Image 1: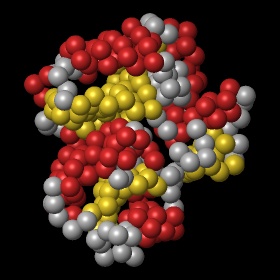
Image 2: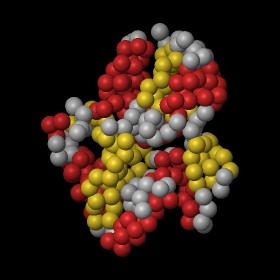
Image 3: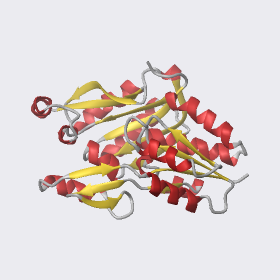
Length: 283
């Protein structure tokens, strides 16, 4: 049985992995000054960063049910079944829209990743590898549902302005963060985002402490794969984080991924996070 794996553009899967596993992507919409653009196709993060700096507006919109229906129909060509991995249902209407669209097909399954960015990508890669191994669609979906709570996803925000614009923090918090050079860690927990530890100082110094904090409970880490997800950080910063991972952990695969326009709309430039799986859900 040939199984097609698809995902939303929010998974930020690097091109080499998209091509390696033949993953197709459903693009969300990014509205720049109310003009629609397709994430990953006709808009790049630099476009929205320039818009924000100029005082313009940037927003995102979910893939609608009709768009999913057409997407699934195209992607099924030559395949016996399709498994689509959505951005977490708490972050977007994408999951509900995909579920609605899947009702038109007897061979389409939709998975709530309960995650975003490369937390979502971890499930996409695992789904593709299970499909290559010949697992049935139902078994793959069950495995992904069990795996979703194991994703350890987090990121350090370099500027809190984008969180403020998105209504995720108050004006007082934003001003205080700027004055004190605070860079908060945003964590995925139970399919939701919450503020974790707040780091203070230069971005490089904050990221050093952040990486070591995330790797502290080594006995509970699944060292099969880790993603370094970032919103256009400097090559030096990314290389430094990679060196920390190589020095303090033994992940079999370390991937670098640049965040797409949807994710960047909400986190802003120079955000960076590491995403991996744990052996048991984090509480």
